[in-house]
Length: 111
Length: 110
Image 1: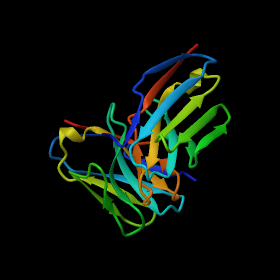
Image 2 (image 1 turned 120 degrees about the vertical axis):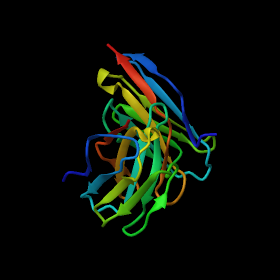
Image 3 (image 1 turned 45 degrees about the horizontal axis):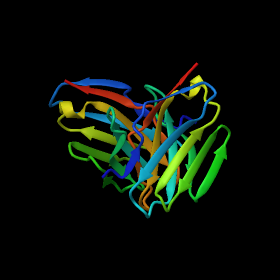
Image 4 (image 1 turned 45 degrees about the vertical axis):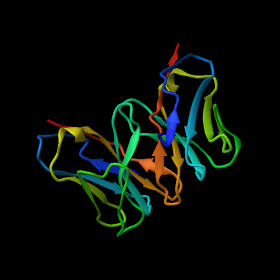
């Protein structure tokens, strides 16, 4: 079983809709959770981090964490064509700042 | 403040050739990382360095070596390149929480 799994996608949503991305992880000791956005041909950039159960909102992005279910999600509200990218879920599974990444979910926002 | 820089951006090698990928960061971070990214597989950690003078293997270290030259620089060496090492390589550095990525090196081994 992979340490971090994401829904495989691709995910196609109309402009203005909500895109919902899911991620599960296997290590119950995980403490830190991140969402990175990666445009085609570019490097990953951090868009959200979350450390405690519940929701964290930043503009149109909301991260949700449920440690009991080992589940973290990302909601993109009012999706824009500029949100079209691959979204990578990353989890810090140890205390030495190593991250485990999921394979990514590609989102396409159609106008 | 350039962040994380990598050279070269593109490289084509023949099987058996060697090369070194260079990475430097100007954010005074202790931790640095090398990843490879292949289609459908996300980012896989090759090696990392928690601090100057230390290096450790990641998930896929075979065929690679690293050097943490100083706090700023962390290089990745392929001693005898193989077609299976065709990939995009990313270097990253961390402030202990967030990882910041360089622009990547696209390597093709023929």
